[in-house]
Image: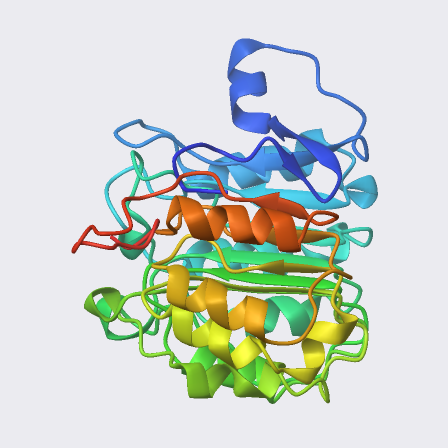
Length: 317
């Protein structure tokens, strides 16, 4: 997954662009059959609150299970505070909502570091039955205002949580670690780089490695960092790995050092999938991984040059 293209599927449903369909005069699908995307185009006269109001009025929102929020600003980067308030205000009209993607915005619309996200805690407290939440945007000092944030909380039904950033502040994973999420099965962080507000370190990820938190966790993604090798070394003997079904260490500066640490650590043959795409592995190490993990679905695509002095993450600016 990258920020090059809009998502096509979300929460097991086809993403349907409500605004495009309305403007084209197309027939709308059944409310529960798709994930509804509401967004505006840059440099257009479209207004997100107006489009959101149209969505509420024209769709049987009582049956809507998934919503994707696209670009909300037609005139350059603007805070998500307004759209957030509108979504929360409509909570009683969305009783079946189980999944939210906040910020399906490509780099051509707004670089990820320009997506002015806010504290998303109210989403989880307002929608106690939510199963999946994806948040994309700027975090920390690089963001205008508060940026992407979360406060520790308890949520009984959240199963999948992903934060996508070009620079994730340590406060976000710390807040997740301090939360009680008994149903959480999938957890992913795009860590990014310090130049775009990233302050997360391997130490901030340790709470997710001991296996004591989130008893239902089956997938862990620690991605898009310049210290992927350190993360791999920490995972090599981490208790949580034994109960994972899939592991994602993609999108970062992952080299032979990190791969060797994984292979020299605990067995990984129980995994169904190991995602290492966007890496800097030598051909020899790629062969070692394929041989050692022959029964694992292994993604080694998007290989960079192992001797490249400019090893970069997939998503930063």
